[in-house]
Image (tube, rainbow, N blue to C red; front, side, top):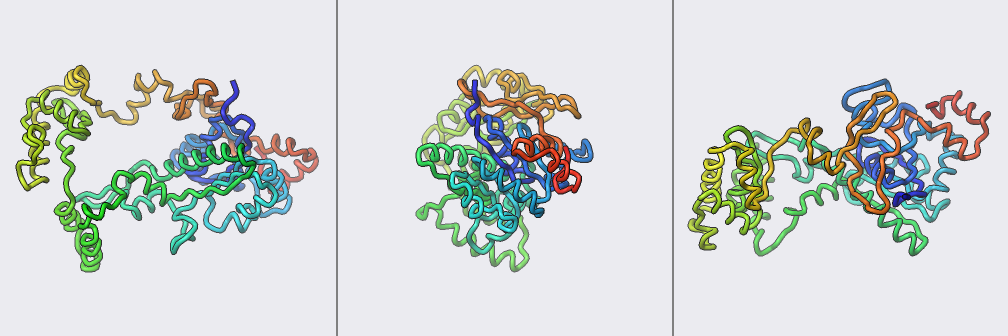
Length: 418
């Protein structure tokens, strides 16, 4: 069975996470992906645990199903090779620093002159317009800029996983697939723009909105922030004031992590029907759920009080016992696991959400499987992440470059041997 993107040629000019993971998703879907890297490789080859001189763990998890060509894009011979590759490509994925693509002659305007059918997906930090357009962006910087970071009485900390980068990658992959479908109907390529700023907003879709009649407090709060920070206010002061303004979600009593007698479980009481079921099952009285009217003006205090009642009840039995009992009556619940436990989780492996692949140098790798299952045109893991410039000589031969010229390029060092 052919994969959905079989026959599609993708060139990745990327580093770190957003562009490489996007290209990996397209590769999982069957696209022929060429990763064009600097002579010393994608920066992520040196991220995480180093496994060799040219590979580290942070490279392995987002670069399968690709070939690699490490080269000097400033060299005229290499530029011609890349121009030939771009002329036959269907998709370009890039997250180079602002201005770099134009400097190298591989920006959208240059590429589309020789290949008007190209789908050119570009990832930036802050978007192509506005006062911050030229700034490079990294996940943690956008977490801070957009308020996605975790704010608490102890201060500010980034979300440990680079969720902004991965969200941008998935938005790009969705955009590329949509644009390829559009091209089938129109014959026209186009440029796609995805920024880390936009991705961070998408991740906060539940809260990034403004209803004027309800959220009038926002203007006062923003004014307070400016004045407070200029006067040296603490984060505790700022958060306390916000808590006094923002209505507390009443789901808080039945939603989130709770301790059992021997560990932690997660309850997901996100709607009134489920909340009523949880309260009834635990024998917890909740006047709001029973009458539909909040019995006190102290909304925050009421939520805290009800949560304490639920928490006290859950402390009476083990996590395993509560999970079995909640599952039996249809209450959404799960136990809390560490990532290391998840790698051996029966549910994950039963659905093939993880895959074991063979790496010629590092042996067996447990990796996240292609994230969508297709019944007729399955996504596949066909090759492990490439060594630096692995596949370059094969690629040059495909372009019809003579063996003599290939050896000249390799010997001069403008294209790295695999």
